[in-house]
Amino acid sequence: MSEKLLRPGEAATLLGVSLMTLRRWEADGSLRVVRTPHGSRRIPLSEVQRLQGTKPAHSRVVCVYARVSSHDQKAKGDLDRQVAHLERHLPEGEATRVLVITDVASGRSDKRKGLSRLMELAARGEVTDIVITYKDRLTGFGFGYLERYFAGS
Figure 1 (cartoon, rainbow, N blue to C red):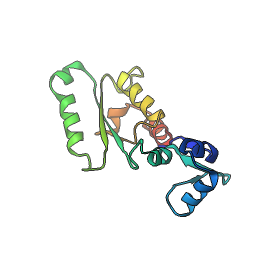
Figure 2: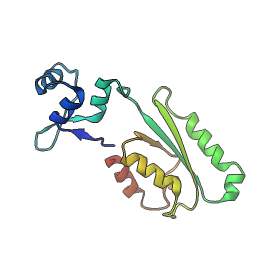
Figure 3: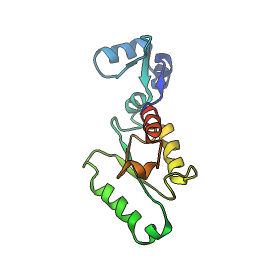
Figure 4: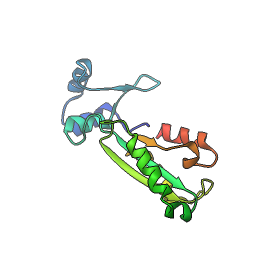
């Protein structure tokens, strides 16, 4: 998942320091800097937030996404069991926050509110990981497209 990258001048302004200070922090390892394909330096927004103390350095927001196809399956507890299974198998201490998003709809439907919300959160960089039981829970077809979308968000 990509995050917002700032130009050094933008980062320096937000942090209230000079460009020389940013270079010194980069040299001593206090600041993680990303290089673009053309060699330009960019500072991840998360690094600026870490230095400002507004966001934990390695905060991970894991989204548990579960889906059943019908209200009958939900009534039988299939959706709750799916969520419980996913939550039980999350690596301990890995996530700062866990979001649970569910849908009751066909995997072929493009009108799933939960999946739309998940995609919006990923696009804004608010989710670092997505956990599903099987590929078909996320989508009935086109999994590769969603996989590339989430990897690029």
